[in-house]
Length: 238
Image (spheres, rainbow, N blue to C red):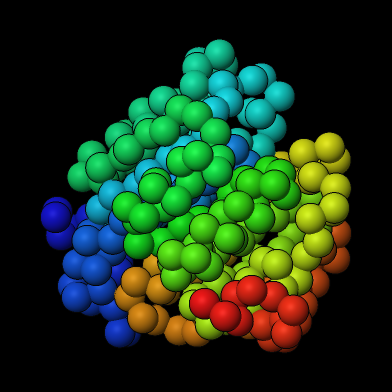
């Protein structure tokens, strides 16, 4: 671990070299390397996360460049995980990147998630978000949910025994990819997700568990809504 690059982390109260070592030993899976996955991957690599898994079956399209900042014009037509891995290598050559150029689905989700310490939900559709939730609840893996639609975003973190995605949302919600998205807004939500990951491993601060943080970028109003595990949700039984 090259210490000079993390000097500003070392200056933080409660962080120091011990915190940096924890990041270097961490293994994080990012599901979706699009609008949210871009800032999450870049900030986690820059922070010194030791191993990052990237899973996405898509290729870079020119319409992605409005918000997916890990990709560039030269990446159009390239697999997103390949494009992202190349960019991460430029940011931090010490970060190991594992790529999965296929969909996160019921056939592979559990075996892949089991290899990581923390999962970041950057998916753009509800079926995948529910799958991430169900696998993490079953395996007792922590995850951070992020979502953005038009001008509104939301974030929360799940740890075992805290409220999960199914406690809050129904499976018949409309997928966000059918709506517009303000490009810069995904950077805000993705940065919050990356911060949650860093806080989890270093033990700094309070995580967004049992609370949903929402944002309307038109007014820049943040709201934090308290939530509890639903009495009807299976997460209470695991």
